[in-house]
Length: 255
Image (cartoon, rainbow, N blue to C red; front, side, top):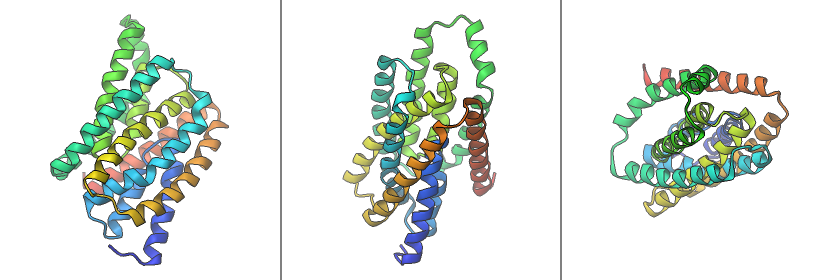
């Protein structure tokens, strides 16, 4: 890895932007992870270090959004518990399987999630016409959260976008409340993944420290700004940022 001050400064800037993005719409990994690769960090180490470096910013965002959450406490606790289970499963898989096959699926997963999130209002109305009970929607949310957390533990790029798509379909709350749930569940997923990566000796501690300090500042600024936005405007911001991130990633992958 290149450890010159210039590379570390670029990582700091990328992490600052990633912290803001994670507070607004998720997907900060799409900025931070490529920055580490550019600096010469091996892919699996870069992925693991990004999880650790951005985790404090996710926790910061969750604390800022805590008063906005309208989801029932029981549902929130269940979502956090399955996030821990899924994060463990995904991070374990990362350390025991090659990355390339799964990375090829990421653009497809992100495009599907964004399409679902964009049409979430219509999907929600369709679900209501199907007379799905609150219990059924909660079950879908919990099972879906486990799948998303498993993905996030393996490769966390745009995990927040996937969670917002899931919550739009199942929780039906405001964008601010969904962002609060997302940050709590995302931080739980990353916390257990970081533990697995530490025991697997896949963390670059110097880079992680630089990332964490920048991402916390970015997340605080992003979350405080997001809370002051009109809910509909906030939703549009999320969509614009999320589509921009995903299309950029698809272009990088050569699709």
